[in-house]
Amino acid sequence: MNEPHAELTLQSGETVLLWGYEFERVDQSLPGLTRLMAGDESGFPPFQARTIPRRPETRFSGFTSEPEPGETELVADGRLYYFAHLTRPFGWSDDPRREALQDLVTRATSDDGLKAIQSTPTQDLWDALFIYARGERFVDGLFDSHAESLAVVGNEVRRRLIGAAT
Image: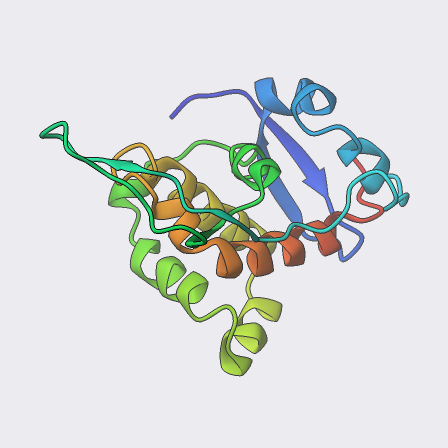
């Protein structure tokens, strides 16, 4: 894909590629992110999954299932979906890393998954978020079904962005 890219150098010296168009408008969709990158964490809190009352489900046949009273579901932080789209676009559906990155996300909340995340390059972590965000277009609920794991991955990327130079 020939999209304009912005390079971001992290304090570790690692460089990540971002989608240039989106990165120019980052404060509109993700207020506080540029302050985070300047070292001020106060305006961009960590991502977290949250529990909400279960929503009715509508199937293609038009049948709607109503949730039981008090039934809840876990959903991803809405900011995380936009954050995932800041990485540069790539052919994620054919990417040879896709299965490994998806596995990394599904294991993110386990001890061995946390260790793997800490040793994974930032670009790969951000790309993993992007894979799930784009996959949501084809599988409704994919992003929310991995809300806790995606928050862990997103928070690791967030941690590495603190004090990054553009």
